Image 1 (cartoon, rainbow, N blue to C red):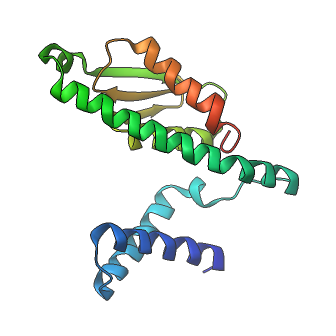
Image 2 (image 1 turned 135 degrees about the vertical axis):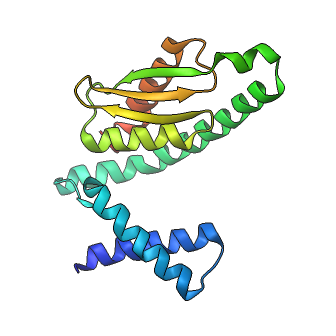
Length: 165
């Protein structure tokens, strides 16, 4: 096993142990097995893109901005979900499926956008349709699908594209 693969597996196993709140050897072993399974199911996630040194540093410098924007997005989404839960009763009837165009995203960019969608409360990725080049997501408030599409595109263009095109 390559050192990079081993490092990824150990990182994912440690993340699993933190999530379950146990560092028992059985939990760490289970985390390692799950990590290998995830790495086999999603092989693109383990392949580093071929980048020049300059491009690598440019993306690295934009990473904190992406992380901050992601934290703000998740926080705002939490408040929006609270508004759906505790707001007027008719807001709960606006759930639905929205097709978000993949646009110019690379395969890795689609993976990251899908992760961002599912990470923010109130939305979850349902399906990637590579033939139509759309990402189907379910949203608790899909009353204005165009607004959701604009939000996803704005986040990609402004924060994600510089790091994960």
